[in-house]
Each structure stands twice: as structure tokens, then as C-alpha cells.
Image (cartoon, rainbow, N blue to C red; front, side, top):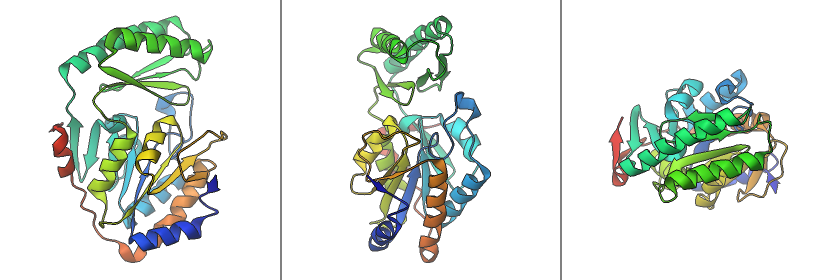
Length: 280
């Protein structure tokens, strides 16, 4: 697998031929190091500076499984667009939207939440994160084998919403979402379409785990980069970076490339209208 920093000249030529780029990144494990407690995740000052420099020069977005409100307070950059909850919540051009989810799906999610809360009490170290439109079950600190937790989570999801809920895996986390047709792949493709500053701008997506593989596949004609963080997992990405520090260096290198292309992206949510989204 090719290292993105070692192939900067190749990437630069691709961006030049396309006439620009639109940059999208995951948050955890990409912009901020993975931590045992999700609420402790923070970007470094250096990463914030690199992200800010890029956002001034080209359209930039965060595509994350975190809830929109949660990631907004961690980013704190007004010119950065966000797709939260795997694409169920959006922030673009100062406007927020939420994808319509059927009442039946939301009832199934609430029922599953009760079962998962009981699981949290049963297994020490398991943490259930309620993100309103989805649920994440973290077991990085669990005192039992991860597979035991995974089996229980999948059993609960099947029991309360086999046809209305789906599970997206991650690194020692399982995400339970309404089966509304959204994941990071669809979210990244829609985000690129919403905020790109030119018709042929090449999408760049940087992520670090299983949830990002959907985006790598959806943007297979773009520039896709998996952050390894010490793991050599199979990936659909075209390039890799070693860790969050490598991401920071890549962003600092990327920012000046479009110095002469600084134009205002459309940053429009009109494309989401087709998906029956509603204002928050």
C-alpha cells in the first residue's frame, strides 16, 4: 500500500489535473488520537492549525459517526462542514439538517437502547453512547472478550429491530443505526457534491477504521487514505498514513496547493432535499 506522504507529487498532479480538491476526514483516529473514553478525544493545537489552514484554501468537511453537536464543539471552526451520525445529521453553510427517519425505526432504536443499557450494567468497562439518532457500544475497556460483547449487541439489535436497524462495526465499537440507507459512503459522496468548488474537483477522504471503508469504496475514483494507527488492515483506500501526526503533516502540505484556487464552494444543502431531510 502506498504511503500518501511518500507519494505527494503523484497526489499533487492529480489535484492539478482536476482543477481542485474537496477534503473530507473522519474525526476519531484521524484528527484526534483514539482514546479509551470517547468524551476525552481532542485535536492537538497543531492539528487544529493544519485543519484551519486547509479549510481556508479549499472546501473541507468532517464525516463522522459522532453526533453533530458533539463534533461541532470539538472542531470549533465555522468554515468546516460536517456530516454527523454517519450522514443522518448535516451542517453546511451555517445551516443544519437532519435526515428523516421513520417513527418505526426510531421506536426500534429506543427499544434497543434499553437492552443495551442493561448490557452496560452487566459487563464492566462497556460504555453505551446514546447519540439520539444512533447508538455506539464501546468495549475497548471491557473486562470480557470483545466477541462476547459483540454477540450480545448483535442479539439485542436483532431482537428489537431486525428489519429496522443495522450495525456498522469499528475498532472495539459497534454502531447501531436506523436502516435509513445512510452510511459514511453515501454521506461522503453527498458531501463532496454539496461543497465542491469546481465540477471536476477530486474528493480526498481520510479515515481510520471499518466505518470509513464505505467512503473509500464510494469515492474509489478519488484520493482515499486509511490511517493505520499501528494496524495493517485490509482496505479499499488507495493510500495510507501512519497516524494522526502523519495526517497533520499531510494537511500542512496540502493547504498551500490551492493558494491560487481559493474560491467559495457552493456549500449548499439543496442536494439533500431529495432525501426528505428536515430542518433541526
